[in-house]
Length: 417
Image (cartoon, rainbow, N blue to C red):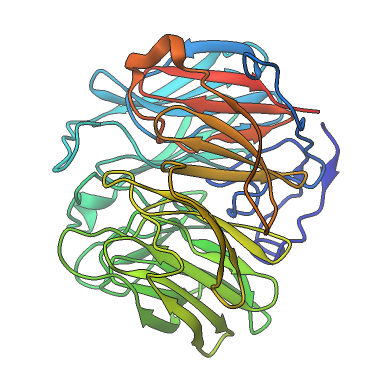
């Protein structure tokens, strides 16, 4: 798949400098940060008995950052010894093309993984990475030459948080928007993509693990961002906050799922820990809840996927089972069905199908149906690498290949039609 398509989704239509090619997965949760692949991506509706054919597999370092793919090149961000390393690789073989890295001394407050959490962002021939200790860097996508680096935690006195920095930056035009969580009015910071210079700082919002998304509101570019305690609409030009509503709570909680923005002027945010979900109508002036609470959905970090007006989401927590895959009516929050034994994981969508990647290493191919759960295929590609730990990194889907990684191995699987 190489045909270039104009972006028409509301979340990114006016914010990307160039069209996305079918088969590209340039940032967290795909072309428009909603878990949905490019329109010309095609999934096979069945897998061989042994699962999708492995194209290649290779060892990786520590971390849970998903890979991204642009054309014939992919990008992996991981920790090797005491360095956070960005590596370009050939998608046909997994072979490394170049590497760039910086030292790290990060140790998490909770959990044992000390690698980066944030998926790289590819934009305009650059790769943006955000490490666990808040090191923000811009690297030339073709050569691996580092263009600039910012130590955001040092510059803005930001705490590292439970697991390190985990909110993937968003590129809007010539600005890199980051939920730094800094003090003295530097909760959100915009950096010049060419120089790394600070363009503005705004709010006192602590950082979350949720990645912001781009929207159009009031005829202008805006950013919807979930921070530690709130959901905000932010102007990328100057950091002005158009509106906000409380979301999150103090104590041992996190906001980690990305906000989902719909073409009809609605958005959804979800979290576990007793926080639940808010589904709201919004414009440039405000947001009004339509339904909310914990009964319909409360997901720890998995971002829901919309298919034909219905939401497919994983309810519950990874660390406190059980977790359920469920289907909801997006407009009412009514649960159509729920599979309580499904397990926790993440979702992506292409050509009318869903792929779930559960944290215990299972891939599940699902045909969306609001009447029932229809599983088309299951596979455990990491069975031979069972010591690699949970499958928490977000998968990527590009040109019929599914890229999945655990704590030891990155695999490319043939799932295309």
